[in-house]
Length: 280
Image 1 (spheres, helix red, strand yellow):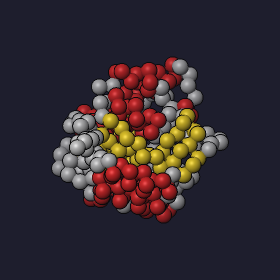
Image 2 (tube, helix red, strand yellow; image 1 turned 45 degrees about the vertical axis):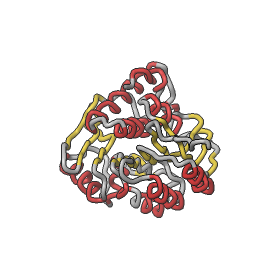
Image 3 (cartoon, helix red, strand yellow; image 1 turned 30 degrees about the vertical axis):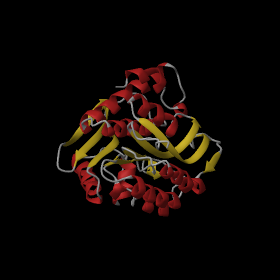
Image 4 (cartoon, helix red, strand yellow; image 1 turned 90 degrees about the horizontal axis):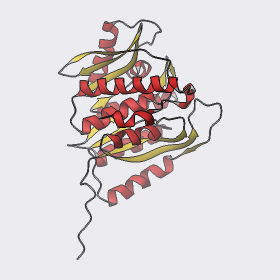
């Protein structure tokens, strides 16, 4: 009698995000970064795009109808995941599918990381409706770690977004409200602080504070995806949360500097490939 194959001998993360062929974002960025940190990455695509939505023209195929069947096949294989990481969602229905996925594949020993991709600079992305933003809020209570930027933190908590300087009192309030929704660990990313960009890192019953790096260049696509991938893989590997956030920040800064040196258009994201071997 042939023994049943054991597919769970290596650490694995189920990555629920879109697949974009050009522009260095979502799965295209996250899969190699997670792999470089010695964790197997298993993508479950929410959509397939030729290039990301920051370009003037792009092809997009919605994968909603495939997601449930995709997960069913994984269940037949008896797959277990050390981490579940979520990103871009194309519809409210997709979030319901992800909620079911977490119920089926999550539980004790599985770290859930939610990157609530909804918008930036005080505006939601064109594909995000008010209903979709409300549904995104249902994922947050299931997260162990949540990684919103300032805009997304405001949407999730119902706080008003504003341009300019954010006080520590405002940032701490955002973080506290996010903790009240459920996550043990919160990092609010991309906080402008003069010549620095900061991430506010908070553990519900532990350390809290800013981790700053010198600002270089301007915003590029995919940096949030890269940040989330490093944090998720490190969480599965048992790396201290603050150390992981600092590592992700420094790595992305190096990638931005190299992208500027190469003269890459902002839409092309960051050339992490040239620095992938430095990520440990």
